Image 1 (tube, rainbow, N blue to C red):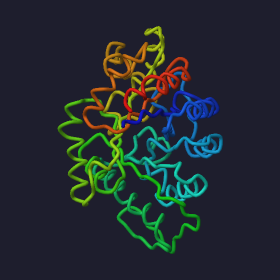
Image 2 (image 1 turned 30 degrees about the vertical axis):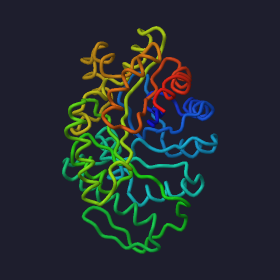
Image 3 (image 1 turned 30 degrees about the horizontal axis):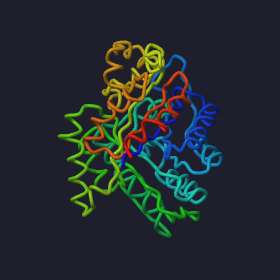
Length: 328
């Protein structure tokens, strides 16, 4: 079985409307909602900027079954790993079995704009690896003393720990992060859409990491993010998903380009033909099933659709009634 989930995009939609969206997902039987965790958006015009953490608590309280987590949180600069551990431990205590944590190395548009220098890729990876180690220690151990290369805590204890283990997913676009996901995570998250890169580099790296840690690769979640827009009028679907053009320039995930105005300026080079080819821009369920099939055949266990539809509730209904049943 492959799970089709939905991502709540704070960059494009205000947090009040997103609460209505997640209630609608819950009522329609969508199993998981991922919430983007950004300080700044990928686009300037018509953008929003809600904070993921308070929204998470509100969303969990307003729903009954849906499982909700971040896609993804960067515990390397603007968030200290100990605070990430505390926030998600609290959510896990209040809503057992309904919370997960997705983490990654972050982007300059969040870290630089919140007052931090932008490290090298090597440093970001080392910070991420160390942060994961510290988060897990705080979730499990009683008292923690830890001094790493980047973070330290002394006489640290989470007095409110999660009631059930919190799944931790590691995100990335390269083999290094994919291997780390296999070694220390409960799964791997990516928004890489190149089939050859996924088949020949990313998923083999996840498997190698799992093997190194003595874990069963098949038991790990393999999760793909894709922006999606549904309308019976294809032109309307395209107009709505243009918001994500900046996020399609992969260099912006590594280099210090942090101003949404600059990202939007560069994103103009992404044409509608590219959007329609690469993303899930659909006017019926059959188109959606066909576009997702090639990724499912690669071995992904979950596809997360960032809902950028003109009428978002209609995509949720389409997923619940026609797309998800096709993959169960």
